[in-house]
Length: 171
Image (cartoon, rainbow, N blue to C red):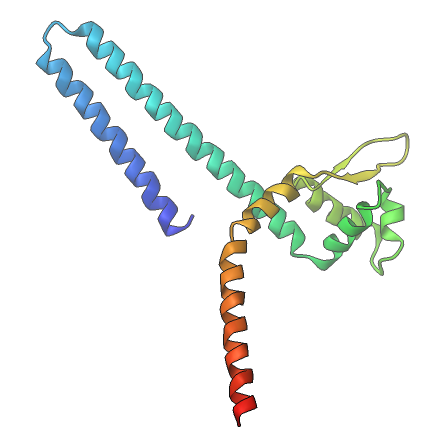
């Protein structure tokens, strides 16, 4: 986990701890406040539950994204995905253009399937594979966060190149 994410989690834990201490302190102030304590404790537990669910969701999304990029790292798997973009195909049909064995293709398909990039069905003796879009869409949306950054960087590069061209024209 990145350093910033760990600090954010620590901050949320500290915030929760402060909320629990505040609830306990308020209960001590209200000697007969059992009902108030229960309401404050319930709200504190709800806050804790929300934090835990957000953390768990974030971890699951990061694991999914890691699996997608790991699957896309191999050129053979990228070619398999390109082939499956045209429609579903069996292992034999997928393996035809590759100079590797059918069991090797099956292992690549298992990696793609575990990343959620493809689905496989059992159709009599065939196991056709087809693309699924959700994991790829999450990877594209993650990459889109950097689009503005790279757009600015490329604009700056264009400015530098234009300045270099003007200097060359003057000489």
